[in-house]
Image 1 (cartoon, helix red, strand yellow):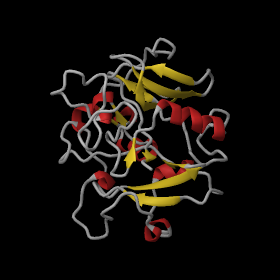
Image 2 (tube, helix red, strand yellow):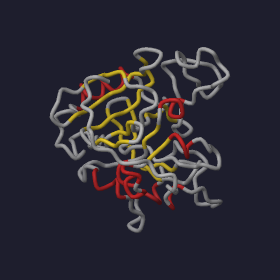
Image 3 (cartoon, one colour):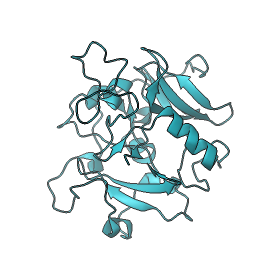
Length: 251
């Protein structure tokens, strides 16, 4: 997007990046089969802790889910009639999805930053494009194999999906995300923080950037941007860039 400031400083992408220990799939009976159910045993445990939870609003009563694909635990919050993840997605199971090695990243190529801010994904892998379809850049693949630009499961867990542009705008209108205390703690508990984005080999921290399930053009899918010192809103972003994913429950 031409409206997003570019920086001359860059950090080279590392080919030696390894997934964090919490992102590796384990065969364990303690992992829930359904990612859409609340896990009271996890949410109430004083032993389980994630760095991303530092950005949550301590006055909000969050629920908790487990992503059955890799055992990742996420805080969730219900705002109006929508249920959102209160933190960015950090899915990195390269056994089930080997392309994640080349199409997802941690800020500054540091694993702990994925634990803090979630993982960046380029648009094709975030939206689960089907390369066999000639119309892959206009329509997104749903879980049942059909295509619909407004119902995109993408890389989200079972029972969740990528929010549309209008859902993000509705959230911002009711929750006033942009005027929240920068750092993520706001009255609604959605926890939008400056997680940045990746542009080819460079990383930027001037705001929060999320893929949406809508698109502006064939080469520029629609993104929602919350910037600390600039006007926030909807922009087109080239598909190769790495942005955050925040999932919404598929009701």
